[in-house]
Length: 203
Image (cartoon, rainbow, N blue to C red):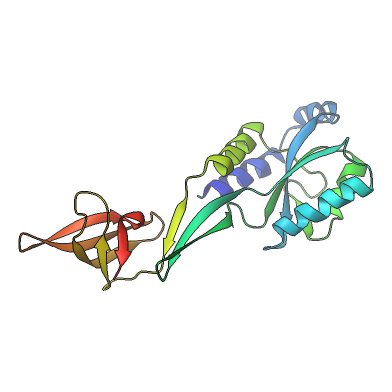
């Protein structure tokens, strides 16, 4: 199960809370909490922009505080050129910190691009504070993920590490780990070596 699925499942489980727990939730209705909204895929940043404008226009800054689109930096290496882009950690989802009432619900729910709140059909369920902190921390401290247009059979030059300046033939590629395995001729013997994308250059 992915981290996104686990977080969303945790929030769905909350919808099955007992009557007592729901009453406790009502008591805390005037507190700001984090909620997860579902958006059309690719519209996350547009939803954030639209919602920020609606908050200002409808004077809701005292009930809706922060909108986050968790992202990470991805470094792509194509044709020897390095490019950086922002990639969504949870495509199709936006985090909103707000005090939930009929007015704030209406403003968020009727923002262009928003399809629904995560939770029960009748009432949005706040996300766990610990989960949100984990997501935001991951977004701000995410180490760069490197993408490279390489495939099995291509030759690469190793530019760093103990095998620097050697040339190898790629035998396996692990894009999810930004690593690969190559056969390198060392003292006349073919030796398998595991390398990170940042350690190689395409020939």
